[in-house]
Image (cartoon, rainbow, N blue to C red):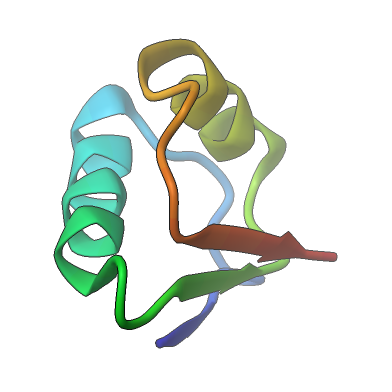
Length: 59
């Protein structure tokens, strides 16, 4: 699944939790590709779910 997040300016922990849950449901048969996510989202995912599989970030 691909998500274009270029229009998103900020994300809180609740939004990051939704993305983490989606990636967990897709794994191991699929992956979640985040296109142009806000920097804050990447930081939250790294802190709260450091070893979450199935997420790919593309600039």
